[in-house]
Length: 487
Image (cartoon, rainbow, N blue to C red; front, side, top):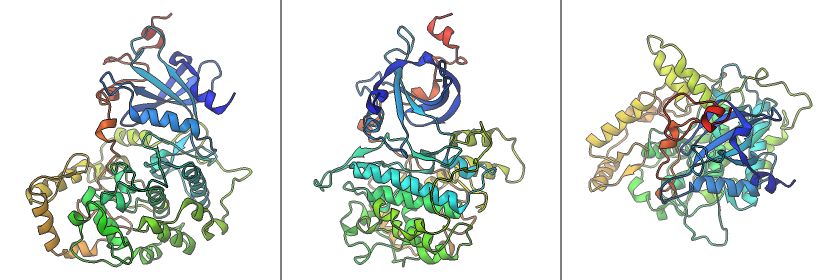
């Protein structure tokens, strides 16, 4: 049976036994399930079909369509589409996407203190990620949401790229085609999107790849902005401010005049990386990062060129080992959602324990070899939002996006005229233990946003429902027989 026919097979959800929840997103929850007949474990994403006129969620349509075209060993496989049984409460309102199951995601592994990453792990995973992404780009497809939690890894170290809900085809010949700039999670979002670009290509994914590599090497995300504005400042602090020489077209971007930095900053990314005492950093890794985290997308390294970089041809070689050592004991999984739930379940500690839990649960992953200190979650972001609003400067909504009202320009002008404080000048985003300068606690990275036209009217309601629960049910999840009236 061909791959496309497998992805299109229609069955019913009662063929599977739910084990536990392993993830959740804007448009669905993900569960570990078991095929009742074969015993095979799979990951099932529950997607609610909107009852409103928007109809089927656009993200699910894209993911199903694109994954049917993408068959590669480093891209997660969509095996089936299944529906609720006929006559059930969810019939016509829900579909289920059945994926192959992977033991871990990168975000979960980076947080788990039981996992010790080596230079081999980092290099082998980066090669697999780049090969999967090159395949997408060769097919004229942008992922647009590369982040640690969307990178799946099994216990033997095999990697697959997942979550294609924001992916889309692009055209190299129609350079004036416009795409949404509200894509890619904030900490992995490239400067051209932060400055409002709506015409872009594979370079947006490659910036995210550079952020992933930096996160594994230094033990925490490289650019941890508290919001849209702060994200640009953190990037400029290390990568320099745009100039005619390093980014000739920067002044043409829609939002550049609003975000024009008050003073020029020289690029210092390479010396910062070289100064960090990271266990997995070397001159080749530093050079690769320096070529990925480039402001000008036209000069950013491509996936094809990245695979030819010297870093991949030096020991340890990135290749599948005959007898790899398992990352974790058998039947132990490590996903971002699970580590967040485990962190919330820990008893509260006195004297700053909550800050440590916030770090584990709010998006700033850390490797055990490079602790980065404590941080906080939403409170720091909210405090910054209140300060910005009360000062008359740019105001930020709950998604970290700009509120451009009548006072916006005046606030930006005042901001440009003010000089940096001594505390700002001393801030080093890559220093171990550094937290975003704009908030005393580490913020949660802003999630990707889907344009309003793509958002189903009832998307928020589905977050309250269990995989096998009837629509609108608030009671504990019923058994399959209770739900479907079967004995």
